Amino acid sequence: MVLQPVSYQNYTDELLVELITDGKTFAFDELYKRYGQKLFSYFFRMLWKNKELAEDCTQELFFKLIKNMEKFDKQKNFSTWMYSIANNMCKNEYRKEETRLKYQNMKPQAGIDHNKENVDMGNFKKAVSGCINELNEDKKSLFILRFNEQLSVPDISKILNIPEGTVKSRLFYLLKELKDKLAPFQNISFNQ
Amino acid sequence: MQPEDIIQQKQWEQLTAAEKEIVLPLASTESEYSLLKNILLSASGDLEMVPLIDISVHQYLQSQLAVDAKKRSVISIYYYAAASIILAIVASWFIFQFKNNKSEIDSLVFSDVEKIILPVKGGKDTVVSMQPKKEAPVYAKYKVKKKFINKKSLQRPANIQGDAWAVNTLINKDENIVSLITEVY
Image 1 (spheres, rainbow over the protein chains, first blue to last red):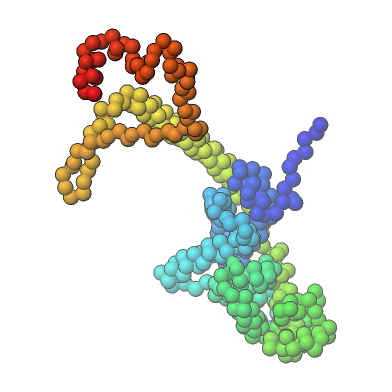
Image 2: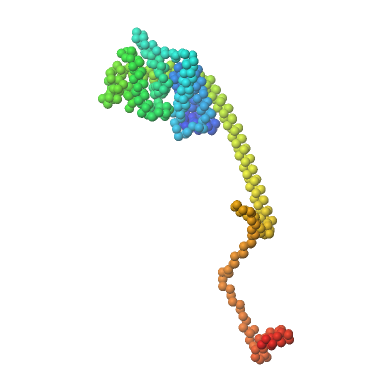
């Protein structure tokens, strides 16, 4: 008889959490495979594209998960829970950054180029990225969760702990703001 | 359907009247619509801009998980040990109590419980003598049979006349008793 290694690919996140609590380390590997890069991307986008900081936050988040795995309510959605913790961690980082800037009297880099004469898709992407970086913490997290992480409105509402209606209206105003900021790119056509 | 979903999925020409109605507050013209579409496409296709997470993060977490698992197993051993000690103490206490009670009951003499001091609220303790309760009478379930009288023994002997046969022969022999009875009569 040949022993097959246990595959956790078909397990739900919640079941994996249960297995990790029981000491199955391979279940953790599967969970990390699912969310490691995703959460890193979220942190990277949220935290001024700082790779080291994003890695530190990802590590800290998973470390917290390992330590507090039994606190997870199995009735809840694991992914939503993870993102809500990540969002709170980002808030803390923003607070720290705010304090740091207050004392150093510095402003974060904008990174936006509105040069009309040099418009191509690369520049447009940079401009979009710059605009998103300029957004305040709440708007930024909303944009990233909705358009980068492709999460649904009900999930975002749970992560940010705000009603679904508020999420929708905030998204509306956010898109309007971005459209106004990127108006110089309005008449340029891009081939996708 | 949300306006951003429509923008992401459809071209301006493909929009129905109802969809245009939804999108209208955001984009009233085709150019506005395509700008928004480009913004959203640029955001969703942003993945290549994000670097890959360093492998050392995963390695560190794995090591932490192993340490944590070890710690948990040690803690659980301590818990089991503590629980078994507590159980043993409780069990031995119960056994001791049971034995003690039994020996007390065995050695108990009624005189020990004859006088018991009862505490009285707001006064001196009083000594109350305890009397044993009378045993409840046990009634026979069946009717008691009447004493069988051997009528034969009451028959007059053939050699005695009158009522003299009824006098106890033993009394008859005692002269003092006979004289007393005669006197009374």
